Length: 171
Image 1 (cartoon, rainbow, N blue to C red):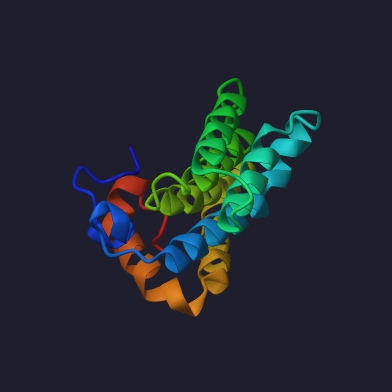
Image 2 (cartoon, rainbow, N blue to C red):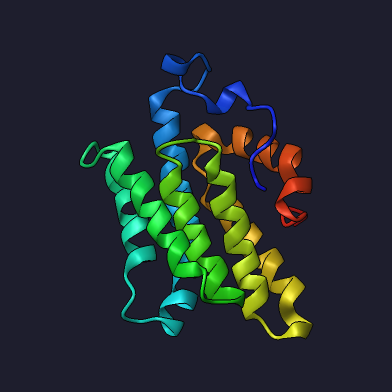
């Protein structure tokens, strides 16, 4: 479970009663897509002919440009999650990261799920004695990619949801 029981209004769009502007929602989706794309090679090395996670990331990005509907991106998220089910370790978590990234179009708070699964993918793919340092490097890379306009929001969300995201944001 990566979503809080009580939804944070900062991740609910204005039209749904929250405070999130569309521009920030799009930045969250793009950052989540970047996080997922960073670990996507782990999935593609295991399943090179399965394009569902790559397609989910692409449709999440396309949603930010107004090229596809939220429903199309959300559907692609489900397909990426299905691609993960038969796998384990880094490839599985990388596919889940892609699913979470595409789901940001539907629920902005999924942005942290994409980041958390990407960190788990990096950790799982590393040799056991390097797993924690791989996770820290991935977390630090993600933080370096944060656009200034959403940086404080995401860092605060990491702090607030670290416990339900497997404590992966301790970097």
